[in-house]
Image (cartoon, rainbow, N blue to C red; front, side):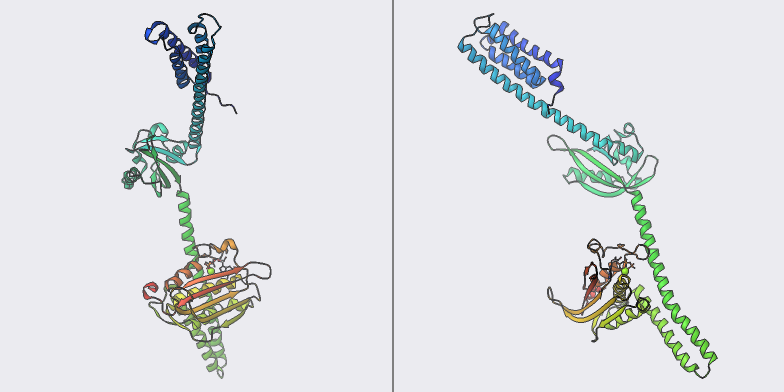
Length: 474
Ligand SMILES: Nc1ncnc2c1ncn2[C@@H]1O[C@H](COP(=O)(O)OP(=O)(O)OP(=O)(O)O)[C@@H](O)[C@H]1O
Ligand SMILES: [Mg+2]
């Protein structure tokens, strides 16, 4: 591709080249000291043309100089014929001049490219949706793009020359000088979330990327700031978090109400029967008492679930698993899920019963939700000694299902808060909470899962050390 420079075609450039050459000739003709240096003078004219006017004018000056040398300066004067020695001199002159001209051509191209890149960058900045602005070391705004105009509501001519603190809220005026101080110390680009104010006084939550601007010597002369408005995003996140909290509370309340309602209904029926059939009254009343005990234990469990046990105590993992399976008994029955348990020994550890109940309730609940009808659930607990690190003794609980499995994509997110694939029913807090509870007990959770036709399923393993370090468990 041919790149042409305005300088190459500029008439002014050619006129300047003509003047440089004419000046050289004049100096040679009227100044005796220069009389012996015609080549030097004309070469200077070519070099000056190359430096200031570009390739075309330099070439023009070269040809003009060759003509002057041949016709005026070299003998025989005013004739085109030349001796061999003069021809050699002319040849060397031509060579040097052409070299200088071609260097000028390269310089012209590089300049042009730099100009084009600069113009393109300026266009990108101007058309960017993000607000991009710059300021000098004194915090005075020096540039302002269309995005900044849309975001802050100020036109460029209103803010350029104004202090940048006009964009900060009254309680955040110190932030900008502080940040500039850091930049001047040579700190790198800074990204942070903060507040800004629009021209109409509306507060915005923004994400800023501030980078230093340097001059040719590398000295910091200001800062450029890219501002993204994240007000809507922050509001949506807050609303989502609030909704999730409400949904969790709602779901918890519904589960408790449901679990309590069943035995209460049974108690009502049994009392009615006891009234009707006096002979069997005692039997009915003791059945009602058992149901009442169930209500009491549900209430106790739920309190433990919500509050967590007040302090560390000896906890029997097997009986916690029994309680949790009991809590889910109805769903297991309805979905005809085959449960196999394998935890004969009483395995005790130090921990919070309520919190651990929450962990196993969530993992087993997830398994039940992933299982189809007639699916299988296996719950196993065994004494276990870690094979690496401190090799602590403890208990390992394995909960395996042959349900839907967890996709590779979901696997990386399941322990993140609010990650759920159950759009309407899940909060995505279960595993996140479970993970932090197990961690507080000094243990770990691992998961393996497979998704595939006829071979899918998930295994959660939870290790709890026999003696949770009190500091961690606190
Ligand atoms: N056994 C499992 N089988 C298949 N997917 C699972 C299993 N356990 C967890 N998951 C996946 O992990 C996600 C996160 O689980 P988590 O318990 O944190 O939240 P949730 O169950 O969706 O919601 P919540 O626990 O609040 O009811 C689930 O949505 C599900 O996609
Ligand atoms: Mg869950």
